Image 1 (cartoon, one colour):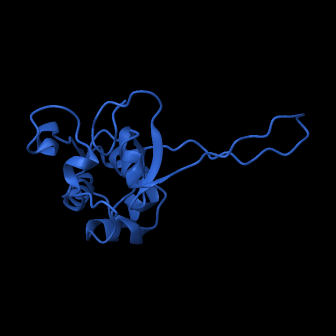
Image 2: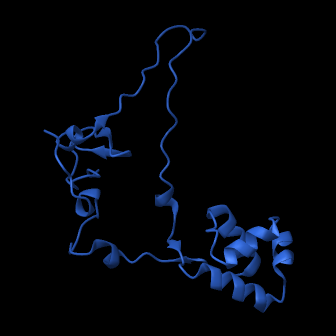
Image 3: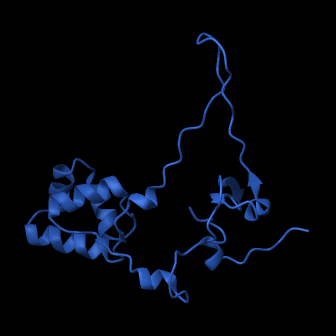
Length: 158
């Protein structure tokens, strides 16, 4: 596992810290740059005793995504709907949404969330995601993973 701040390989157990509002898994050296998150411990004893609340596991939605939303999603939806020969109201009824949602998407006033994007893709037989190019994301680095430390300038507290 690699530190999400500096990119170095973490030996041992990673530290969970909050840095500028972001929850990160860091190495011991970078853990001092934020506030460490202490996990509540459950009480040991009979099952009828109350245990401390344990936090649900953090789910990274960005790891599940295969790409990012195409910046021209509004044109793709509008053109596909017109090719299919249906109105905004008919499309809305087909995917069980309000017509206003379709209108706002086609005017780029509303960005569809993952659930709505999948409904639109299925109804219109289009793909609204584009592949994220690895070479585009890495900028100056020839190899390795992109970390927060590659992008952000960290100011040390004194």
